Length: 438
Image 1 (tube, rainbow, N blue to C red):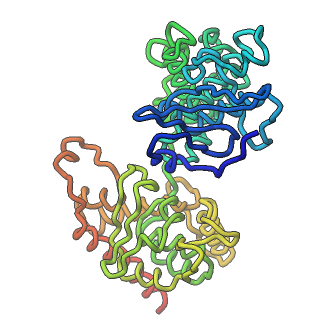
Image 2 (image 1 turned 180 degrees about the vertical axis):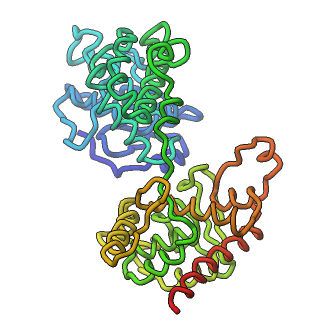
Image 3 (image 1 turned 30 degrees about the vertical axis):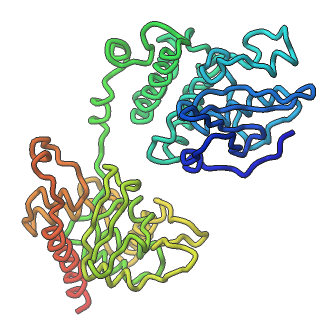
């Protein structure tokens, strides 16, 4: 058995240079073989005193993750079992990663059937497709969401089914139970099943129209998801801007990290994931700016937030931990949860009601305000009280301009105007707080 090598990351594998055979770790015997411009995955497993190589496809067409999945599946046929934590991906006999002759199979079982490595199923296609695509996705969380929705809704119906046998009836069995009750989830499931079946068609595992396609297919079987979403759509509950000062005063009377994170979000009009992932290295106190990297932004572009004096004061009051760069670290370590911010508002609402107050409700929806709703509070104030132009406000909220022609001409970030806007917003919040204290 080959020695288990140190585990290499996808970035390290991409940087490998020079001819040779490089062990990538996790799966014993898995190597990346480099010969000039050629990069090929090979698996070496000792059988009958020999250690032949089996090609698993070229890199980067076959990703590091996909190569490890296929290699584990192949090793399962031998005496070396995969560890419990390893994901098992059935190897398809017609996959390009497995098109080379298999000396391991030939030596140990010359009369083995062509599909001894495992049947082609929808679940196999799904896992292979995800492994090939996830490196280009925004985060690992996105990959987990794909697999989670497929496990919950698609695999129970079509997981073991060969992709060529999947029909419109199968798709309807997946979607109908959740189409009107969980429309957003259902549309994502439909799109994911469609993408996987398109991939299966591309790899010649099936032919014909895609039974999960919408246009000319499911549009005749199911109501429009757009109309369903519009009918059910509700905005995030928001506090009226005339009550923001009272809320901030109450908020500042509390002492915990979730309270600080929520105030930071109000002063910067940031989204939850942007707040919870905020780091000291993103803050420039001298320039009074917070640069949020594109990985946490909805539009996937770096976003600069001008920091008001109040935001700087809050930042300077935060503890610095040598072992953690987060502005707001959870008690158990790592980032705060999204629920932690809304829990602060819920607690404040309940406490205000006990004092005989009216709480912190959205008067239109009669629901307790949420962290995201404070962005709407800011939006209403900026338009109705501060009289700032729409494009300045939209930039402050990191929104995409709806007018494509306007967006094409408006390429600047309006940073100077936004700095003035954010300072006025902070003064507005603090001014009402000061009035409350008298």
